[in-house]
Image (cartoon, rainbow, N blue to C red):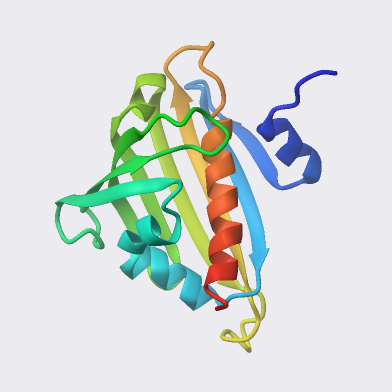
Length: 181
C-alpha cells in the first residue's frame, strides 16, 4: 500500500490548495477550516494572547519568549520551542517576526527569521485570516479560518512542509473547540 502524504490527503479532501508562484519556486499552500467559535475570539487569541499557546497546546508548544518588541505588534519577534505532530519528538526552535497586521480583515502574517525551519526553506511566511460566516451576526455565526503558507525550498529535494501544514490544521480545529468552552 502506497504511503499518502498529509499534503496529498488535504488536496484530495479539498482542504488545501497548492500554488506555484513564478520562476522563484515559491510555493503556497492554503488550509481553510470552518469553526463554531466567533471570528473575533479566534483572531484575538492570535492577535493579543498568543503566549497562551504553550498552555493550550503543551504537547506541541514547549515555550515562547519575546525577543524583540511587545510580542504583539508589527516588528515583534518571538522565539518558539515546538514539537511537530507525527514527526519525531525532537524539540525544535523557530524565531518569527510579526510581518503585518490587518485589523479590519482579521489577518496576521508571520515570517520565520531563524531556527531549524530555515535550514530547509529560504523563506517561510504564514498568513492567517479569520472571517465570520455571517457578517450580520458576527458573535453567533462561527468563523472561517484560512491559513496561507508561502515557502521557498532551499533545494528541490527538500520535502513539502506537510508536518507544519498538519500542525496548522490541528491547532485551528482544536483551538476552535477550546474557545467554545
